[in-house]
Length: 303
Image (cartoon, rainbow, N blue to C red):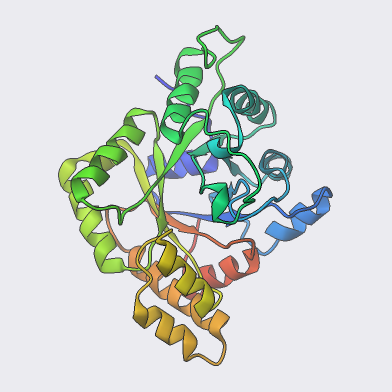
């Protein structure tokens, strides 16, 4: 059995209380005060802050940012991207995270660097996110390193993953979801939801398959900054379908960014009442103040 740390998020999930989390994108800075200032707009009542790992370009260290937050009493979930590290670096950083008081790890493969993160960089891709999750699960449950050596002590982590609710066919979607649960994920964050009807369809299939009984599902929402971003996401298909009606609303608004916040808040407010969801996660793309606005407008709270 895996040892789960006594974090605020874990306790809230096991108690069945709706949780609220938000994203922090580490600033490209070395000063811990800059990190503190970045998360200052986010409510202290959040159940966790998910620290992104170079999602859109080269930023400050996600591990260092998570350590700063942990030291300040803000519970971080550290995102770790296999795109940028081989298994040696991954294992080392997992142990470092445990040493620094990080209680949750979100295992992701990451967007390919050619999509704008840093096109000239070489990707590692030594293992994928599912293989990484399995390796961390083994560390936690059995006290063994990635290559089977016995550790001095087993670290304690709440293991998290990301799922794409709009992946079709649905059968393939469920297979991939089951693999992440089998690999040890106990919390799954969805990609950003824009098409609520399509998301509800996916959630219904998850319920029928009984997959949701083995992990807590947290739905992510994203405030769009303008029509250009909306069209880019629509073209890339990075998240769920960004409908033409969403783009039209933003294009027709006198303040596109404010309209993006309003749309995001509307989606969050509709999702928070779904019985099968464990909570809501606010993505922000480095604009933590925008996430705070979504929380306020959607009437989201965390105890």
